[in-house]
Image (tube, rainbow, N blue to C red; front, side, top):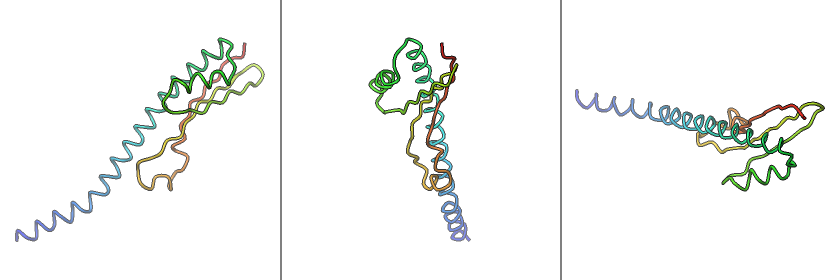
Length: 117
């Protein structure tokens, strides 16, 4: 009788382990996405400040990227009365197979629209 219960526990553990590991990896990846989104929102605020101080887009990009350990992509588009500022960065997932399900989930961006004065 004891041998059957030990074998049953082992089989249950082997079935549950991959699902548990996948959930842990997903939680870590989405935590990284949320953290990066928060960081990019902060960078966007800095870009707005630099833009309002009269700096050019190339100057702003060099200032932002020289103070970071990783490089972000900066887009500044002027459209009449408004300026759209977009800061984005791609990160590599640690969850196996997640890029096959949704490939663009790891392109995180923050956008801000300000009045062009």
